[in-house]
Length: 475
Image (cartoon, one colour):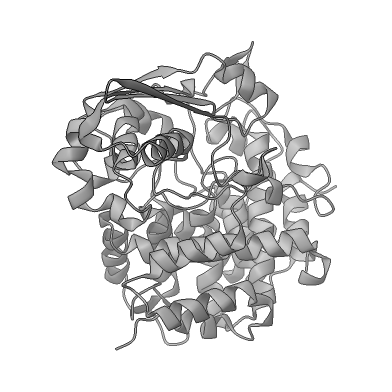
C-alpha cells in the first residue's frame, strides 16, 4: 500500500506535459513570467542583493553543474544560484500569492537551476512548475492556514509558515531530473526532514520586524535540492512522514491539523491552483492591496494632494491587527513592505507601483512619513462574514478627509484576485507590463521583450539554458 508521500511522488513522476489541462499550462507560464520579473526587480532591494552576495560565497561550482543568477552575469553552483534567485523573487514582496501563502519563491528556483544545468526543454520545466504549485496548494489546505475560522472567528494558528512548500519544491527538482517515483518519494522525505522551521507568526508579532521576513526562501530551496541530490546518491527517506499526524511531519511543522484527504483527493485529475493564484499589482503585503487601491483611486479621482489630507481612516481585515502591520517606526526598507500606514501613505502620493516603492527615497520620504501619522486603522465590521462567504474577500472601507470634505471608497476584492468581479483578474498583458517595469534598468527593452515572449511560449523552448541567457545583462 502506498504511503501518502509515495502518492505525491507518483503524481509528480506520472504527470507529463501532454496531460496538463490548458488552464494549468497557461497559469504556469503566467506565474513563471511574474516570478522571474520579480527577481529582476529584487536586484534593487537589500534582501535581494544580500541573497546574491551570500550565494557567491558558495562558489562557482563544478563545470557542467552551474546555473545563472537572474539579471546578473554571475554563474554559480546550481545550489548557489537557486538560493540567490529565491531571495530575489521574494525580495520586494511583489511575488504572487497562492494558499498557503507565498509559493513561487520556494518552488521555482530549484527546478529552474536543475533545468538550466541539464539543458531540459521548456515542457519539462513547465510541467515541474505546475506540479509544484498544485502540490503546495494542496499541502496548504491539509495543514493549518493563517485565516482559519473557528466558531465564526478568525483563529490564526500559533505556528505558521511556508515549510510545506518543501514537498512541491523537491518534487519539481526530481521531475526535471527525470527521477522515478521511488526516488522522488525519498527526495521529498529527506528534504522534509531538513525543512526550515515555520517562523512566520513569531516574526509578525515582534517589532521592529526582522529583515529576513517570514522565511529565508533560499534556505528552503537549498534543502529541496539537497534532498533530491542525496536521494540520487542513494540515501532513503522516511516515506511515512505524512502518514502519522502525531509523530510525522505535520506535527514537526507545528500544525494542529492534518487533513490528508484535502491533499490527495483528485490528485492528478483535478487541478485547483489556477483558480486560486493571485498576482500583486503593488510591491507590498497582499493584505493591504485593497486599501492601497481605494486610497489611490480616491486621490486620483478627486485630485487630492498629500499635503491636503487631514486624515485617512481605513477599515481593514482583522487578521492584520498585529505589530507587523501596525508598526510606525520603520528602520529598514523591508519593514515598509508590511506597515499599513506606510503603504497607504505611498499610495496617496500616486507613485507608479514598481520597485521604486522599496527605495530609501520613497520609504523614508518626509512627506510619506508625515502622512503616516495621520492614518488610523480599524477592523472592518463585516470582515469575518465576508471571508467565510468567499475566502478571496479583502473588505475595505477608506475615508479621506481633505479640503473640508470626506471622500469615501469601498472594495471587497483586490486587483490580481480571481473573484466574482472580472475586473479584478490580472490579465496576461498586465503581467507582461509588470515584468517590463521590473526589468527596467536591468535588461534592455529588447531583452526583456524577448524573455517575456519566450516564457509565454516556453513549451517551444528547446533548452532552459537558452531562456536564461536572455536574463543576462548586456556588456
